[in-house]
Image (cartoon, rainbow, N blue to C red):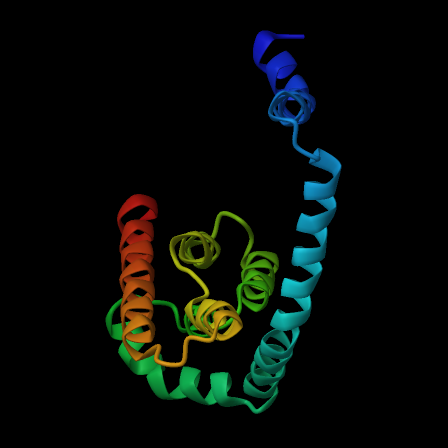
Length: 176
C-alpha cells in the first residue's frame, strides 16, 4: 500500500480521535455536542421540507407541461446559429432549478449520444460549471427568512448564464 492510500485510509479515524482528544483536553462533552448537532440537523431538515417540496412540485410541473419542449422548438433556430445543439436547451433551462433533474438529463444525453459526443461533453461541462441558483435561493434563503432576494437571483442567474456560455465555448474550442 502506498503512502497516499495509507494516509487517506487513516484520515477520518484520525480526525475523530483528534476531536475526542481536543474535547477531553478542553473538558467538553463531545457526545452531548454530537447529539445536539444531530438535533439541530433534524430541526433544519424539517424547516427545509416545505421549500424542497414546493421546488420539487414546480420542477415536475415544468417538465410535465411541455414547456421545455416548446422552448426548445422556439429557440432551435437561434441555437443552431451559434453552433449550440438544441438538445442542450432543456438542460440549460433546468440546471438553475434542480441539480438532480439536470443530472438526470446529463445521464440521458450521455446514454443517447455516448460519452464521447459533443453534446454529452458539453452537458457534463455545463453541469460542473453552474449551480442550482433557484434551488439555493428558495431553500436556503427561505429557511433563514430572507424575503428580498431579487439581486441575489439576478446575480445568480447571470453567473449561471456565464458558466453555461463558457462551458459551451470551452467544449467547442477544446473538443472541435
